[in-house]
Amino acid sequence: MPNNLQINSKRVGGLFLLVLGGWVLHSFLVSLVWAVVLAISTWPVYQRLLASNELHGKMTWVAWGLTLLMGAIIIAPLGYGFSRLMQEAEALRQLLSDAQRFGVPAPPWLETFPIVGGRVAEKWMALLGSSQAVKESLNGLGSGSMFNFTKDFAGQMVQRFFGFLIILLALLFVYQHGDSLGRQVLASSRKVFGEKGFLYTVHATSAVRATVNGMMLIGLGKGLLLGGAYAFVGLSNPAILGALTGVFAMIPFAAKLIFGLCSLVLVAQGHIVEGGGLFVYGMILTLIADNYIRPALIGGAVKLPFIWTLLGIFGGMETFGLLGLFLGPTLMAVLMSIWRDWIGDLKMDESNDPLKHIELTR
Image (cartoon, rainbow, N blue to C red):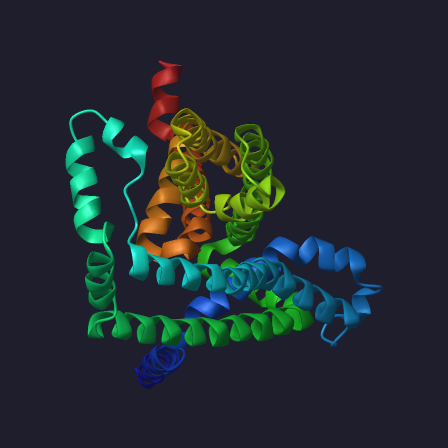
């Protein structure tokens, strides 16, 4: 009895410390999971670049190089977009200045829309048609709510930047100690799930890598196809727009932000057919890529049925946000592996049922 009491006390104490540690680190858990996802997806590359297995556990130039490369891949598009935004700030300032002096007349094509065209044109003139209307609209935008929004946005940007630094630091740590961490995870999986714990861990890592590979392929394909469409409809800088679309296309349905804005620009310039055609083409491409190609790429790598892959992607994103894009399919892959093992055990139990053997001998 005293031994059992001592064991239970250790378990309660361990559980308490685990909960306390999770509470202390809860603000950084998402960043740590992101670092693990990046490390799992790039671990084969790290292994190939590493000169010797004896370097595991040591800080190497490979770990530093891959960490900086991952940071550059993420920072470079954002930095370019910010620089372009700063370049366009002067043009926006001039546009607002002209609007305050002369107003912004409604585009001639706006009234050509059936049924709602006239009403939309009247609303446009009421909000932007004269200098006084523009000043009143800008005063509304410059109220305290707009100031609070800008303040909150700046705070979120600073918070995301420090979170990104945490991800890179954690990624560097995982690269350095990944071999020993992997052994500990395998040992823990074996202790929790038995001898099949190794198989479940393999399925989880395969699901993460398949998700990353599918994300990269989808982004590359949509960037190329929509980049060609941008050039076809006559948009300026189609290569840059295609690259930006490819980055956004890694997230399901996020590419709509880019080709949707491009379509609106074309419509605002009076190219209604080109704008509408680009939007329809982008929507068809997005639906096919995100609903069929992406689940097939992920599910095919881990032998996960199409429906569970699709539900894992969208259910994971709904529950965990962008991180759920990786966690959803990973969880579905592990659950499907457990289910198959359980069904296999049931079939084995049925085949070894002594009553069945008695019936066969009658």
